[in-house]
Image (cartoon, rainbow, N blue to C red; front, side):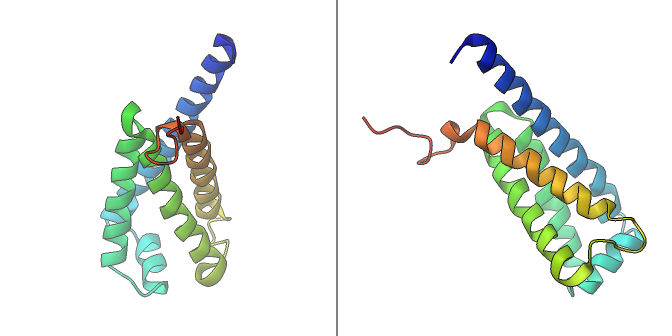
Length: 135
């Protein structure tokens, strides 16, 4: 792989990780302050308030891990897992549009999922047991 291509991949990985972290952190305000929309979502899922708090805490940890070079892969996998749960909730219980948001929350979940998947794929060689090459 050429240095230019490697550099491009590194930049794409950082953009994906930063975008995912920014979105995750931005939504924490709503989860931790008990905004009406967050309370509605987690009440509909039957896990209010502890599910909202736990979700927020896990998203905060994922966002921090995404921004640390040595743990970016872990943050990406953690963020992807949380967002897959959010997407499943939208598809099964909440619907794509929640309280007339035009599908914004669903779109953000898809965006974070895609960014985390890209970040994990780029950093897959850093993942213990997966990234190790056999001699």
